[in-house]
Structure formats: structure tokens, C-alpha cells
Amino acid sequence: MKPDWDKLMDAFADSKTAGVYDVDCTAEGKPLCDANGVRGYPSIKYGDPSALEDYQGGRDYDSLLKFAEENLKPMCSPSNIDLCDDDKKAEIKKYQDLGAEELDKQIVEKEKEQEDAEANFK
Image 1: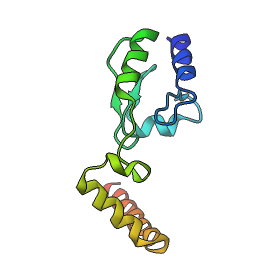
Image 2 (image 1 turned 45 degrees about the horizontal axis):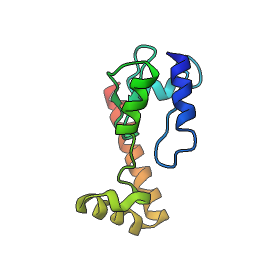
Image 3 (image 1 turned 30 degrees about the vertical axis):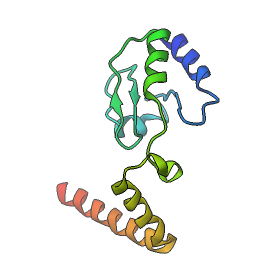
Image 4 (image 1 turned 180 degrees about the vertical axis):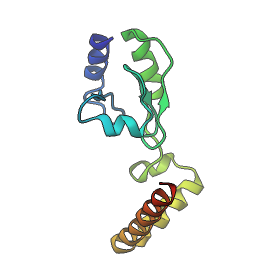
């Protein structure tokens, strides 16, 4: 599968809207793999980086390319606001209007909540 995956990465190397990458889950990529539920190798994930999904299709180049061309598309984000529904646009605007100082404050608060929950769990 590696040669076909490398060929797919080359095919998307210059894309402005989609990315195809590989991560070594046995080395420096391990934390990323753990955070995304990678349990076996090779694993293929796709979609929103905050909610990746498991790919279940064929592992040959033609199958991978067809899937990528049909599914790797721009998504709602601050840089692609026109792709967002009204609720997401409002949520993005809310955070953009807060300013850096308030955003930093909210991040610190949420990180503290997470640390407290983890400590409570342990």
C-alpha cells in the first residue's frame, strides 16, 4: 500500500483545499495517532481534523484517488466562511469578535477544567 499512498500524496501535494499525509505512529507521531484512535497499522483517517473518520474503502491507488477526489473538499472554517451554515457562521463570528486576550482567558479556563476533570478521574 505504501507506494500507492505515496503516489496519492504526490497527486495532492499542490492542492489548496485537501491534504494527504502519512504519520509514523511508532515514533514522533504517536501522540497524534493516540488522540485520533489509531489502533492498527496502516490506518486511514479522513474528514474534519477535529473529528476524523475511518476510511473503509479499497487500498489500491485507483480506489484511494477516487475516494479522495469525491470526499476531500473544503469545509466550513474561518477561511471558508461561505461554506458554513448560519449557526456555524454565528459561532465563528462570536469567537472572532472576542479578541485575543479574551480568547486566551477562555482557553486557560477550559484547560483548567480539563486538568481538574482528569485529576478527579485519577
